[in-house]
Figure 1 (cartoon, rainbow over the protein chains, first blue to last red):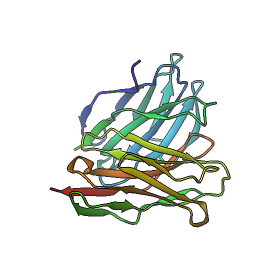
Figure 2: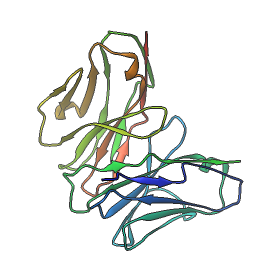
Figure 3: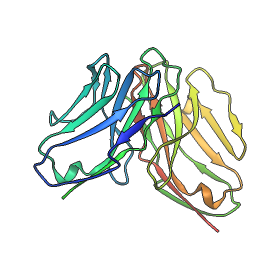
Figure 4: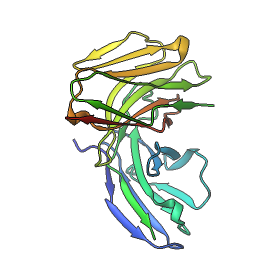
Length: 114
Length: 113
């Protein structure tokens, strides 16, 4: 049973460009959450997707958007990249009804903006 | 509002010493979960423990133990007889009923051989 997978592993972009990160949840999970972890910081919640809709959102600008597909996989899009967007982006999957269940994190995508 | 505070930014200990990582949290929710994760240099968050807000029983797992005290809103983590492989960044986190995590800023632990 595959856990949470993310692609790509690493990515280098330049300021102003757009980027798309991908996440496949653990089998059986229907909810995907995205986190940004800047160097030396804890992960910060970006948003959460369930039933192909954004359900919760953290304090991130509209440049950060997402999508969830019918197979529960998800994409994180960041437009007009800034140097400050350089970070490790983590995806986590869970069951919406499974508050008592474990939430699994993927290995992350390390984004560098030059 | 939810908040998790890890006041210790960096800790260094000599191998075989015991070390305690502190975690203090804030929440108005009555139902929540507290977690500890280990993050090695590879970046993946490794789950260590989960406690729910109604279970204050302390837990021991091998060299790891956790002390949960609601009265002080603390969830401290102790590693006994530390080893070099314990070197990593450790995060304390709170999860609310919406499955949203709030992480502390992490404590970087270095175990010196």
